[in-house]
Image (tube, rainbow, N blue to C red):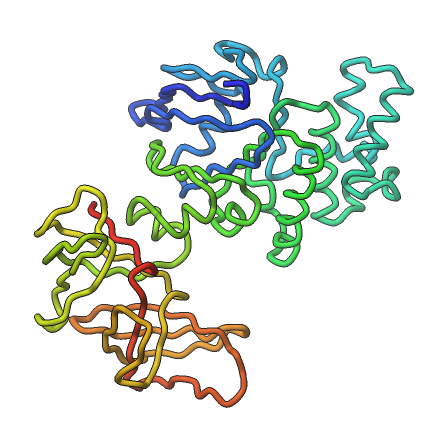
Length: 365
């Protein structure tokens, strides 16, 4: 338990008759950037409010740094919260906003100035310490809110959609910057967001929630490449699916028959744990894992199916293709725009779609 910063133990919280958080158990390690990701109504914001002390569990307990937070008010918890709208005091300067919490704690003036100057330097706003929030850009306001929260050196920093108010380009820049600041200060960050790319970019680990329940916890790579359910696969990025049944098992591989494909053709895949012959399964494939070609025969792949290009979309570094498979199945493929003489596929063109066994995930749900 020494390396656990936050320990959520079988927490239940209902809003009326609706369970907002449903028997949630979760451990967050010290010094990690941990994101809770899910759609609206998944319970992620309620979880953050429970950690902050704005709400209390109907059942279960929350421990922060080994201490139960049962009935501990927000101002006595070793956490600080950064809101989506930053909640800066408009009449105070950057320096005044950052120093506010220290002044409330009656920190001696010399120590206060030293702490605030260090925080300003950390977020690269030393030259703007005398400006008001209205004189700052959105990204600068976000950094002030971050500095104000970190200057008190909380054990845990809670972030509620911290980049939601920024435009796309600034949001992408701040994802990298926020992670760099977290690594610099070494404080546990818990971020709540519905933005998948944001969570994957910044986080050491990610928790996926839906309808109040925890579905999966893992590194961004684990969540993306080995989802445990169709919901996770479709919520994180884009997925292509094929539903079928296991026809045969052969060691580390299985044959999956898919309605709509020729009866003699089976998809070769890695069998999921506990699956047997006849088990219904769903094959999940990411669009960037697919190889498109015009050649009838091509070595190096375990699976080949025929498709037709229904739409070709130029997206700068990539071509996005919408594919029509047998039985009305639609897929998506992403192919790098390598330039040169390689000819792009055109709408209406027949293609062969290929992938290897290791590029697909088979689910039994």
